[in-house]
Every structure is written in C-alpha cells, then in structure tokens.
Length: 224
Image (cartoon, rainbow, N blue to C red; front, top):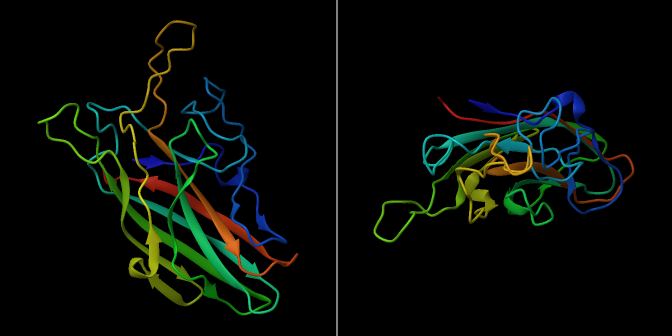
C-alpha cells in the first residue's frame, strides 16, 4: 500500500535561497478539512506544506499502519553555495489538526559538510513503527506513539546510518483516524481523516541566494 502526497511530484516547488532555518518542501495543492475535488483524503493541514497523509481506518484501532513496520522514502538533488556549506534534513510528523506543532522525528545529529558550488544527489530511507494504546487497563496494546525503527541517508557519496541521527517519537497518535461527520452537516459520510502526516525539509548551514534543492520522490508504503 502506498501513501503519497496529493497532487503528485509535479505540485512541488524547489526550496533554497538565503536563510539558515528549516525550509520545508511546498505544494500548490490546497488542503482542506472537508471533501475536495481530486483528493483521496480530506484533512487538516497547512495550505502549502507538502504532506504525506497516512490513512487511518481499517478493521481495528491500529488502522492501516498501526502495529506494522512501514517505510518512508525521500529523494532529490541539492546545490550548495557559499563558504564551507553544510546541509541537514528533517523528517517531520504532524497529527494534522495543529499543523504548526510539527515534531522533528529524524535529523542528522551533525549537519554534513559539503563542497561549495557543487550539486549532490540525496536519498533517505526510513522505517517507522507504532501501535494504538490499549482501550482500557489490562488490555493488550502499544504506546500510541510513532517511532523511528531504522534509517539511512545517502548524500553525495556519504552514507549516514541511523546511529548518527537524532530521532523523536510522534506521540498521542490515533492510528484509526477520525471520521468526518461534518459533510453533509450532522451526517456520517464514511470518510476517514488520516491518522497523521509526514513532511520533509532541508536546512542549509550557510545562507546563500544560490542554494537550491528539489525533491523527486516522497512517499510512505507498507508491504501489504
């Protein structure tokens, strides 16, 4: 099963330019809280962040991905400029109804040093795992959190393992998602909001107008 951003890769803009704060990849697809033409999942989210909506629903409280080790892949290209440039990445998690409170789930512990005026390929592979908290005391259940189980980054010719990354859990995840009861008003249309969203961004260590990065793939997947 594949979970991919609405709009496809053609909807994504490049990032770069001046500044040394996190730059999240952006999309020209508008996300809303209700049904919208062309979107598989209506959901809460910012209008510009490029999001992977990971579906809730399923047969139990674990939904589609709870209790299942699943993967995330992100790849692209980057050009760095300026004196002694460095680059870092961030995989972010968002529960969806408060998009300004992204959780930095994975990043390099130390930014990677690069060569100025040089283009690089990059690709990140991540494995995530989490499961629903038990419904009541004495019942079997999990932590209710989504955690990084493994990861590897290739940037240029350097492979960085998960042991050189800093990870944090996305907590209080409702793996089953929540049902939309707002459309039509007061009724239940069977649409399920995603359990959570994933975002991706880069941080240039040196501010330079020539810095530029693209993302050529970004999706989550399970083996079933």
